[in-house]
Length: 303
Image (cartoon, rainbow, N blue to C red; front, side):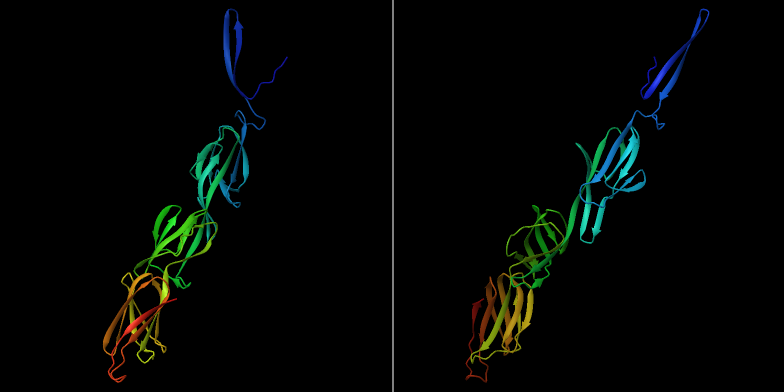
């Protein structure tokens, strides 16, 4: 009765005798698979991407699209790699994080695989989005700060950039900005969770200041240059118009000072800025007006 040998390697001894002399010869035989391979068996290894559909994999120097599966002889070695960065458009990126296969984690985008069992590998990528930060004052007028201080998922970040690449699900909060030499806080401490690319608008505590110059006769004082100094010590300038009003936009909160020259004399004032306001400043009547009556005062009108 004959028996069929299973796939594997065998050593067979053959004896020959002549009188009292016995000779034994050993033959090493391999029982082959039908395809001619000499390995014990085949294994199937599959590859997929868990983050984006149009992903590419390079196996033994050849490019393929995932998902894909290969059947290889057990014990064979194969080079595996995927791109470390995939960017489908200008505002979205996928950054390679790891290969996951059951309890196995491989943190390199490229590795050598020894086919030893049926396995499934998943390339894990983390999405990132480009967000543009728009900073406005309390009235919605856009400003361009010297730098921003952000809370990014619990980490305080100082940056002068208004365009940032952030991971998906990042928690973003504006703390304050440096504007006109002043640390200017955000108007609210709301947190934005990043889920896509786009613009994010934050408002800061900067307001409009209008300074109106009037003389004792109730007439507007026109075309006078006024200097306003912000809480951070930065001087900005504006000129009164035909109604006697000089407009200063996006002034940071805090104590502001202003000054101007009128009829060869300097005048000064200050105000604690907390909201948009109008300062009415009464200047003395000139020499040719109201019989040499010189006086001045100013009043603050909050908006």
